Image: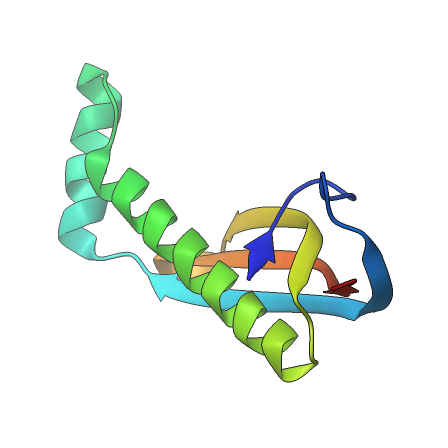
Length: 105
């Protein structure tokens, strides 16, 4: 399935706009990782633990969005937007949202 942040797909014609589709992932951040990220923030540098968690959340949210789009009969999801938020108690949410479309064959 094609997933794009753009509203058009080069070389493809959209036959039908099916509707908005989204995928959500809520993940807990572990205390040790929080502690190590805090140390990284103090001494400088990048937090590999958080970067890894962000990548995992993004991939899971996109996969869930694609699964929902397939169930709707879509060939692609366009105009994809990714949002990341932190919730209380160290929880993180990633939301992938886009428009499910049917492409002309």
